[in-house]
Length: 271
Ligand SMILES: Cc1cc2nc3c(=O)[nH]c(=O)nc-3n(C[C@H](O)[C@H](O)[C@H](O)COP(=O)(O)OP(=O)(O)OC[C@H]3O[C@@H](n4cnc5c(N)ncnc54)[C@H](O)[C@@H]3O)c2cc1C
Ligand code: FES
Image (cartoon, rainbow, N blue to C red; front, side, top):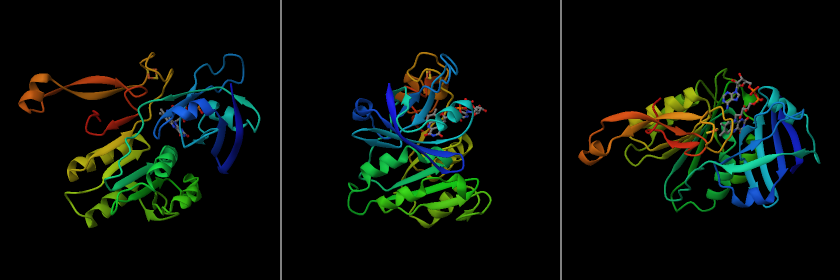
């Protein structure tokens, strides 16, 4: 059993929680996630809820979560000193690249897994390479924890659907507009997390612009470690013959978002 260190509401419906879990933290990487028990009775709700790891510290981990349904409501009522049952870390996480310009694109709470990535990468980037962030949400209050990015010297480009802050429109439009000003071929590596539609639009943009793009996929997850098959993602299956001949002839197969992902090459997914 782990212990809650803090659980603060950052803006209405968005919470930042610190959980004492030194062993788990010692194994965690940016982009991985944990499965949190949200029971308020003995067995109910029975399924754990997946949450991305926001920060990895010696003493444990921090998460950033949105109030969605019963499970997140239950944990939002907990406070410092309360026991909480967390297992993990799970999933593959992001590859850390110091040698490329990186553009991070996040929608709402999709921002969570990028804090640790930025923390680990920002002071190690090779000369001339930098991290740029684009954040999108429906309204400005749906972009919690922005202040925490300041400590890494990052000022993200912001897009809101209602125009309450930054660019008025979708974050994918903002990314596309910004790309047209940058150089074509040697473009940035795109890393993204957020709603399915946003990821699909980015995958499309990456193909059109010849960019490499990795996305963290959000699926309903019952176990988190490859047993229930509830989280499968359709992916392109390239036959050995096609691979050898360089053809793109492909069928569809399935991968588990929890063990093969949640981070996938956007070109691999059948959107
Ligand atoms: C790998 C991974 C990492 C995640 N990281 C974060 C994070 O860092 N912060 C965060 O706020 N959320 C994150 N999520 C989503 C989070 O797991 C769900 O919001 C949470 O499980 C909702 O639980 P609930 O009991 O409150 O809602 P429920 O009562 O289970 O569901 C309420 C409503 O939300 C929808 N819903 C529930 N879970 C999901 C989901 N995974 N995807 C889409 N819709 C869902 C349901 O369809 C339902 O309509 C992540 C999901 C995955 C798969
Ligand atoms: S969540 Fe059970 S197999 Fe992925």
